[in-house]
Structure formats: structure tokens, C-alpha cells
Image (cartoon, one colour):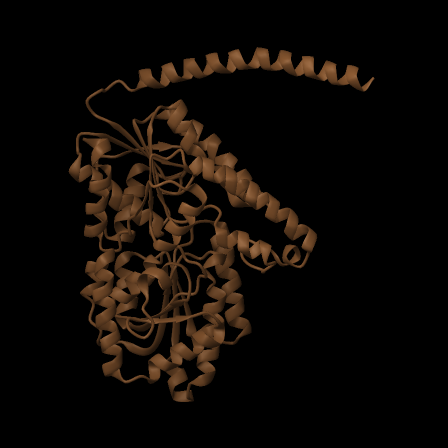
Length: 467
């Protein structure tokens, strides 16, 4: 009986495979022919830049616009298109916001392909198996992008690695990625293996040995798939030593290049280090849970407790950042409630979606910069604060630790709330001459993260593909 059932299943599977494989192969051939036929201009290359959230205002978007400007300046005859999932906005709206937010000349000849399938990568759509399902959802978005505008060169600037084999093998494109952080990292695996509660490892899972084991199997399986997808890229650019280390461990290969992101340091370096409120602390980051604004608020509250009444009356915490959607707005509401519960709401200013000019106004009057994200992949906000002449306290991990901050020389590193509060206190109680030396060292160090250095590296790496 068992043999008959097995034989029946085997024959059924054989029929399905023999029927489906030729159909799929024929479909692939037709699709390839259509895509190749759409590439009509053989002289100018078609360059597609995949950035579904291009209308946001974070560091990733700065990379997008500076990269585009560098390529357009060096190779103006090619056709450039940005794939975006933003709806309800026009090309003019997007370029105007980029110019206002990043102080970048966006008078560029670029077109946009507006994707309708971005909802497939929205995090709230997948409360469980988020990494895998979001990645599979990105393939739906990639197919739409590929058939709307099949490029010769596909550039991903957001890290959607599951799109790479589609563009490489279906679209016959060169695939280049600028990866800000790995979708899964060895740190994430370690959090689960050690049952440590973290952003990627909820408390109820960390407390259960069985659930931790199951999640570890899932993560390792996903890491294997992620490694295969990443290896489909012809060139992988990464933004920091931390990201490079993780990408090389998971993707392998020797095509990984470290290119620090473009920080608009020139304008910040022009800001005077005088006329600052000694007790004003400022943060620059998007309002997402992993940025850990909660720790900033608790650290500031504990810092206030260490000050005299006169000093405390001058202290202020300014939280600067962009709100991309309703999730970010909910995060801000929670932070406001926390400030109320700690009775420091009158001393905390939420500065949302500022223009570049408004950002500079706050930096002119602030003395201390704070950054609290654990395992931050790089930290553009940290660099900008240092360039503006602020004394920065950053988290003792990730990019700030490996690439940016040298403790005691050009800034401070901390981990716990108590350490942050102590660092803030040390800064306001330090001799001004000592602080000026730290500022000078910091401003000298951040020169390596300039837009000029980024653009020159991009042109050098892209040369073989765009000539």
C-alpha cells in the first residue's frame, strides 16, 4: 500500500515537473527577449537606482542623492532612473525635499519609476518571520521595477538583496549594491543564541529555550539564503568597517569595498564653536525604536539629577529627526509620554522634519551631541555633530566605535544610562581648553567622511561599468 502511494506521488510529481519546467523556461525566454528589446539605445546606458523610500530624510537618502549627482556629473549622457515606492508625490516634490533636507543641488536630469507594490515590504505587514517575508516581498517589488524599466546597470542603495538574482539573471544587468547594514548579522544571531533581549529578539522569545532554538534555526536558514542573494552582486559597497565585517562573513567573496558615506561636513565645519548653551544636548536620528531615544531621555533625566538647580535650569535636550510614516509618529508619541512621566517634558524639544537651515540653527547653540543606537552601522549623525563643533557621546559599538570616535581624543563612548549621564556631566564640568582640543581633533578626523572623498571613490569603482 505504501509503495503504491509513493509510486503514485512520484509519477504525479514527474508529470508536474515535465509540464511546468518547459513552460517556465519558455516564459523566461520570452521575458528576457522583451526586456532586451526594451533596451533600445545602445550608446547610452540605462541606470536604475533602487531606493523605494527615496522621499525619506535619513542618511541613506543622502547617499542616494550624492551618488546620483557624482554619476551624472561624470557620465551625463547615460539615462538615470530612481525606482521609488512613494505615492502621492511628484518628481518635483521629491527633488525639492531632497534639496531642502540635505542642502544638495538636485537640478538633475533624472526620472522616477513609481512602484505600486511597496506595501509588500512594509514591516507591519509581517508580525512574524519578518525578515524572510519582507525579503520575499521585495522580489515582487523588484519584478515590477524590472519590467517597468529594465536597466543595464542596477544599483541598490537600500539593501534589498533578494532583488539581485532577478536583475542579474532575468534582466541581464550588472548589479551593484551600496549596503548600509546587513539584513541579518552575526550580532543578531548572537543575540538569539545567548537569549539576550534586543530589538530583533523579543523578551518572551529570549526567556524560552525552545523558542530561542527555533528562532536560531530560522535565522541560520535565512542567513544562508541571504548569503546566496548577496553573492549575486557584481560589486558590493559598504559604509563602515562594522558592515564590511558582517557582509564578508555572510556573503563571502572579495568584491566588498569600504566607501564611507557622504557627510555634508563643509557647512558644519563653518559653524562657530562659540555662543553655545553649555548644557544643551542635541540628537540627530530618525525616530525608530533601534535608535534608542528612550536611553537618551533616561540619560538626560539622570544627568539633570547630577546638576545644581542653577545648571539644571539651563539644560535642554533637543531630539532632531524625520518622521517617515505613522509608525515613526507613534514612536514620537511614546517618547513624549516618557518625558511626561519623568517630569522633564519642559526640557525636551522634539524638532521634527526640519529643513537644513533649521538644523543649523540648533547646532549653533548646542554644546553636546548624543547618540545611543547599539551596533549603529555607521553614524552620519555622529559625524555631522562632530563637524559642527559639538562634543559627542556615542554608543560604544558599531561604526562610532570602529570608524569615528577615539575616546577622550575626539569624543566619548558609553553604553549604559549611568555611563551616558556621567559622560554628559564630565563634558559640562571640563575645562574649556580641553573641550576645544577635542573639538579640533574631531573636526580634523571627520574630513575623511566628506562628499568629495565619497564621490571620488564612487567614480573610481564605477568606471569599468560606465565607460
